[in-house]
Every structure is written in structure tokens, then in C-alpha cells.
Image (cartoon, rainbow, N blue to C red; front, side, top):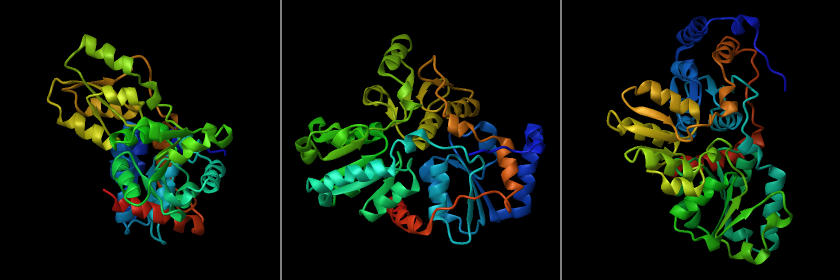
Amino acid sequence: MYFEVSDKYRQATDEQLREIVYQAKKKMGDRLLILAHHYQRLEVADVADFVGDSYDLSLKASQHKEAEYIVFCGVHFMAESAEILSADLQKVYLPNPLAGCPMADMADLDDVMMAWKTLQDIGVADNTIPLSYMNSAAALKAFCGRQRGLICTSSNAQAAFKYVYDKVDKLFFFPDEHLGYNTGRWFGIPDNEIVVWDFRQEEGGIDLESLKKARLILWKGHCHVHTNFKASQIADLKAKHPDAKVVVHPECEWEVVKNADAVGSTKFIVNYIEEQPAGTMIAVGTEINLINRMAHQFPDKKIFELSGMKCPVCANMYRTTMADLANTVESLGSFDRIVVPSAIKAEAGLALKRMLEVH
């Protein structure tokens, strides 16, 4: 896909772009809703109506039925979810259509269907419910809707696990292996009841007896940002600064979350940082734009990213610029919007609505 904004926006100053967005908001009032994920650039987040994690923003998209135009500053699967939850008269836009998600791409629907067929062939599919992380394509969400399943975010993953295990013995989780594994461990599932389906190998690289016995089947996917963080980084930090606090996202590996002082969603991380007293040293294991915004917002605390040597940036979140946003809000009549086919929208909507009912 080719995408480029005109020179009018690319050559404008930050202040001019900001003014374009403000004028659009003033003109359209409640008809325009701008949502921004926590990982967006500081200047983009600053002009949004709401900033939050994927769960919060999903709620906002579903609640603001008066908004004719929803501009979602995030990545493609988030805008798709907003479109699925939106009313018929609402239109959803992604300011930079190239903003995707490598993790979501790791769970291709055809690969998932092959795995599901294996579960059917060995006679366990009827006792299995699929649970997909929000970071997945609409077609995969629709698959979950068809199969009694639901969607979760890092905010409500444990509640979603309970929803499944109250109904069946086996849970099939995708696409993030680490969030799934961490949630399973917190839920009390032992390692000998957890398997990882590797979509690159025949029958997932799992012997069929182990697959039959497993209570939790994980998909071999990951977030390249959060796998940058290592337990050794926590150990090194604590050796130098014993009083430092470490808060990380549950997409990190188990050894990292096990050794952190606190673990939670982006919303949790924001709240955790806010609650720490002035002067606290806080190492954060998540995306750099959130960390930078927190450091900017709380200059009385020493806030920095955990690795100390890497730049954990989500390049796809970073794609969205003020030029993209200004271009979108001035071009709503002609800008390509996010459209999910009606059949997929209906089934994916079931899975997302189940998510919103789980706390």
C-alpha cells in the first residue's frame, strides 16, 4: 500500500498542524472523536479527546454513539475493533493506513484454522474455547465469536481466562505467547498443562498426547518491543539502585514479570507511576513513547526505560504523525475509512461484546 500526505501538511509547523486539528474539533464538536493509544507520539496524544490502552479506547468507541467520525490514532487492529463496535452511521479512520502490528500478523487465520482442525481431529475442540488478544485481525476475532470465544486485552486477560474455564477445560490463546503464559501461571496452570503451538511446524510441533492433556494451548507469537526486556536488566538495576521500582507489561517474558515490582497493562503502568511518591526511580518495561510521556508529565520522578541501552519503540505506532492527523480531520469526506465486511463484523462483534462484559 502507498500512502503519502500532501506538502501542505508535511511542510507545516507543529503549531500549524495543531491549529488545524483544533479548528476541526471546534467546527465538528461531538461529531468528531479522536482516540489515541498510550504509545502514540506526545504531540498526537496531546490533541486527542481520550488517551488510553486498547481496552479503554474500545469502551470509548462503543460508548460515544454521537460521534459521526472516529479517528483512531493507533494501529490497524485497533481501528478495526472500533469499527466493529461502532454504530451504523459512524465512520472510523486510521490516520496512517500503514500502521499495522507484527504480532497480529503472526496469527494468520489460515494457520489458526489448521490448528483448530487438529483439535477437531483429536476430539478436543468441543471442550476448547478460543481466546484472542485484542492484537489480532478482525477475521480472527470473528472466528472466536463463532466458537463461543471472546477477546481480551492485557487489562482483563485474567477475567477472560476465568470466563473460558468456567465453561470448558481447555483454552486456545493467540497471538501473544508471553501474555498467555503469564496469565496462565497467575491463573494457577502448571507448566505440564501448557503447550505452545508453533505454526511453522507440522501439527504445531506438539505430540498429540500432550495436546490432548493440555489445558492451555498458546500460539507462538510475541511483541518485538516487550521481548527486548530481560531479567538480567532488572538484576543489574537492583544491584546499583536497590530502591528503584520496576514496572513492566505482561507481554514481557515470564522471568521479567516474575522479577518486576509490578506488572500490568499500559493503563496499569500509568496509574502505578502516578501513585509513586516524588523522587522515586522507576524503570519501565514497555514502549518508549509512553515512558517519555510519563517522564514529561512527572518531572519530580526519575522515569526511564528498563533496558538502559535499547530503544523499545513500536515503529508502527510511531508512524502516525501530526501531519497524518491533520490530513485526516480535514479530509473526512474523501479519506479512506476502515471498513470490516458485515459478516465478519457481526461475528467479531460477538467476541468483542463478550470482552466488554468481562471485568
